[in-house]
Length: 68
Image (cartoon, rainbow, N blue to C red):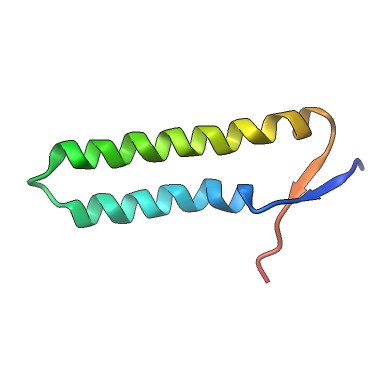
């Protein structure tokens, strides 16, 4: 097994979707453009997080995060 990198990025990649879902729920039906904004913002953040993990993974490294 290769080198292990400890990073919170995998956790944040999951949490971004959960936070966005909560914000979309709070925004309500009347503010559709704001809801779409939350969706796009979450997608861009998630893309950036996952993209930042590509290089170490392709180099054979393992990315881990321990919750407890």
